[in-house]
Image (cartoon, rainbow, N blue to C red):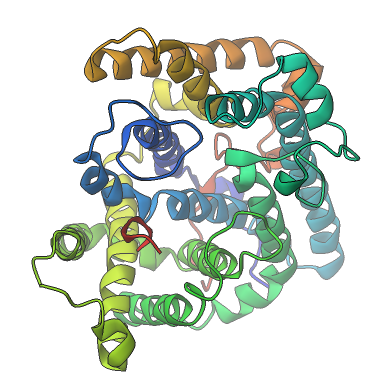
Length: 428
């Protein structure tokens, strides 16, 4: 197992804090875009759909969730590298991490499903003509696991759903796996790997996942049958852990950040060109020629990895410093995440009949969402119960870095230590 890191040699990876805040900011904009973008299904849709948004949103939908899993993995690995290599001490700390992760992820998930997501579902079904009833009547059926209402829309737990909160149970499962497998990963990390070999190995593994699982197991976000997503995001989590265990890799990503950005832009351009039939009708080639499927797989995967590599590289170069706005927002990332989509849906539903131009309507929805998220965070952090419901640290933990196991890296530190050996067209 990797040796414990000497705390006297501490250097904070502030870039992780900043990147995570930015990633969730992108997510808010993306979900507002989903309300307007032409032809892409969402909970409710604007009566003024925008076709041009498709190309813009494809820029981020390849990597936006992967970035969140990547950063979460890096932060958790930081916490694991603080543990002494003695097996009993590691087991004790692993148990603490699992307990705290469960509290910080699963309690907000349950609260979100029962309270925060309900208005989304009510508005969606009302707008689409599925129901015509009061919110109270709907809610009593929504939380009743034995309801006979709308049987065709039931899951294994009735009408209850997690909608955008799917990230929380997925992260919980992946975090448990990372914690349990960390001793093995730490030993394997002693085998030093260069950036070229690392990039080739991770890209080839992702291409294999794309070729074998994407069509067989399309994304569902239901946790139990979402094997393409599981394979994809688990690989991302492994990559994040390896980057922390082998710090030279992140240094290499910083040095090659412009190369990564150029590759990302080139792959994105090829994808957009194909969407606009620049290359002609090549769809049949995907079924007829294996080499063409592999080539397309590498284009899609390089677009995915190159953006992540560029973001990490530029983040380390320009964001690895303390910033007041990052410190504040990073503490509220989980409340912002939990509330943002419900606020977007409520705002869009309230404004749709007024007839504002798209630009003004977009700004109003964005302002309503940001103000609502900010108020939620300010209210949530004021007492112990709401802190628990929104996944915030207790006040006694805020000054104790060793107890921070959240998915936010607000108090996680990475220490330098050489001892570490460390399908629609929208769904490319």
